[in-house]
Each structure stands twice: as structure tokens, then as C-alpha cells.
Image (tube, rainbow, N blue to C red; front, side):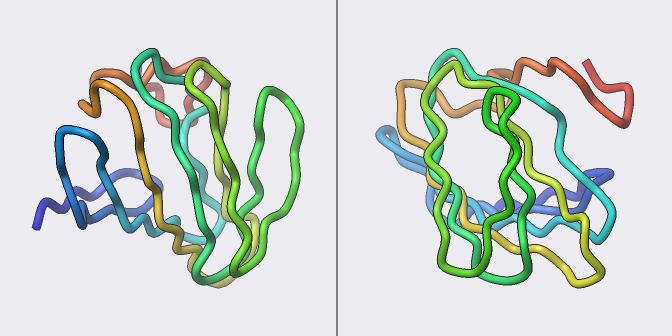
Length: 113
């Protein structure tokens, strides 16, 4: 199983196919992913533990356990854990390409490009 540690937490790839990719993502308290978008994929994020503060094209909303955010291809998005407990969500990617180099960062707390 592919696993990677990032400045905001970590992820595990649960399924990787030509038509989709599924990740389990853990965001540490007071951390957030970059504000980003993708050229080749859309995503669905389902919260399984904690509360995710999700920004979609500038609109911010808190998502709780069982809630799912649908992120169309090209839409700017970010998830933040603004709370004291770990945030875990399942990300399902659909599209034509799922590489990490399809992340276009608009804003990043860790100075990544």
C-alpha cells in the first residue's frame, strides 16, 4: 500500500486503477492542504472522523462525519482541520490521470509549488 507523509498529515492509497484512485487521508489538528485544482480529475471527499473545513472556489463550509464534498475538475479546493481531533476523510478521484503532478497549487502554507 502506497503511503506518504506530508507537512499537514499523511495519506494511504487504498485503490489505484486506470479509472479511479482512492485514498485515506489524515489531516493533523491546525493543518490544511494547499488551495489547489486539477486539470485531469474530479474528486469526492467523504469525512469519516472529525470535522473538515472545506473551501470550494472561495466558499467555506464545515463538513462532519458522513458528509461528502463533490469537487469537479478545475474547481479550486482545500480542506482544513481547524479542530483538536484528527480529521480523516476518504478521497475518490475520477478522471484520466491521477498523478501528484496534476496538483496546481494556488496557495500553500508550506511554500510548495
